[in-house]
Image (cartoon, rainbow, N blue to C red; front, top):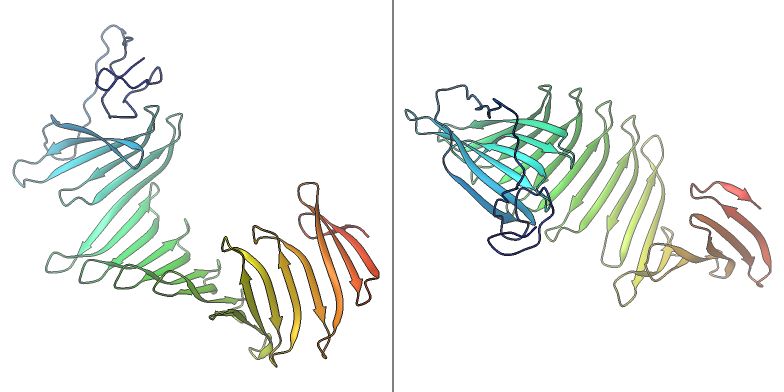
Length: 328
């Protein structure tokens, strides 16, 4: 079947053309005797939409309809339907007269509802939007957006279905993410990530479920400074990592130093920069203490071979994907 408007080939049963957004008139129709379409009733007295527009946005076909208008207040509710390339509805939104989404429903490819969200807006005395609160279909508050005087979003707060605080995201004047805070189920902070103006990570701080700081990573020009803490909050150890990168920007080497600047270990990575292929350990005098080679076997298992300073094999251990020893 081809689109009558642009000639693009469309899948049988598609509702809209994936190229131009034109509605596809299928040859088969529902011939059930006496069957008529039902009008959706709006809470206020409204007239049904006569206007419809189709467009392609971000690879999805969007069909926009003015569902209803209130002749007294001059406000209107706009419904937008989002379709995939096969004409399946993937999302339906309803917007108020200010363009704010007041309801959002998402669907899977079989037409089953995935999520339904309702939105509530709070304005200041000047009519500027201060907050947007998102509720799930059971009425639970799931997300709260807070806006500055200039209208920019400055904080997002997410909640679980039982109302527990899950995460907070704070933004700068240029809408860049500045800080991310995640929480345990008991309300204590799990970890905090701070970002620079370019979106790069400045620091990461991790806590135990009891609220005690455990580890902190501080990013510098050459790599990362990692500080481990004891249960009483005092410093346990400080290690600095310096990285070298290959031509593709992936990690190629990493050297680790203790708090006194003594070289402790040196790592080499594969071309992807994701997997360590070898590690050299040094003693306090800077001499090679041992060398370990890592070899991937099967899909997820790994073999670690450790050698002494003279190149003699000390051990050979096979690990599964969880890091558990399965053979030695």
